[in-house]
Length: 335
Image (cartoon, one colour):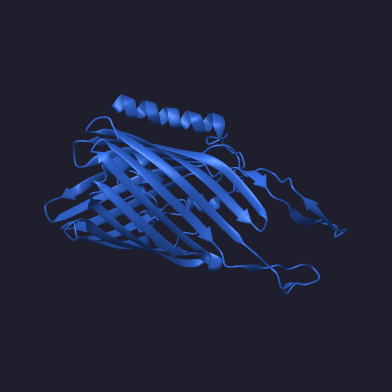
């Protein structure tokens, strides 16, 4: 089974090398070459607090966005909603549900949105606004399927429709995520790999008035450059140095390889007490904006027919400031 895991990981990596320039030549310029950046924002509070290093342990319905292979590891069915006030009056939210008709199969449905309030239209002659406004928003709608092949190995795929809207322009594409997870029966060890946002460039729909740089006038354009998606390859390892009936400590290490920026390494710890209280901390060693570890906490409570979870994360950026994320999950219920 180790051979299967390594083979699939290499296949995912080779797909990125040939289709999306995931592994470019060393020394090549990659910063800022892709759009649809909202796809890189952490989905859940658990993911945010662990610096994104939880592709081997994602434990609620939002796993379909983190590593679809993990949805089959969820106990029965799961529902998750998440919200974060983002920078510049933006709001980031998500909702997902995972249905398990059998213990070895899982199907998911999820949505992600990044929205801004109406923005005033300004021109060189009306810098304070013309009285008109325009809308900006991103949305992703996804379907996921996962399969457990053995007690140790699982894989999953998520297909997404993605749209970015700026005034009358819409950029649309279809993307694919794929992931695997292999559990080693020693100290809770897990190996996982996830390949995210693989697909064609987003095409333009609609027309917009464009002012030329020379201010010689405006023209109505209906054709713009395509927008490449932010393809990302992640390879992770986690294990449990402490695991008793009352306490569990999980350590994470993850390599992040984006197509539009430098490689980074995420390190994280999660402490659990009686499967009730969770404390989390994560650090992305290559993130320039990282000043202090990402921090978070979670509460898990059995309400009889299901398990209710509340998770919180605080992530601080040196220039833009701190962000807060809340996630509410309901898991282990029957449909």
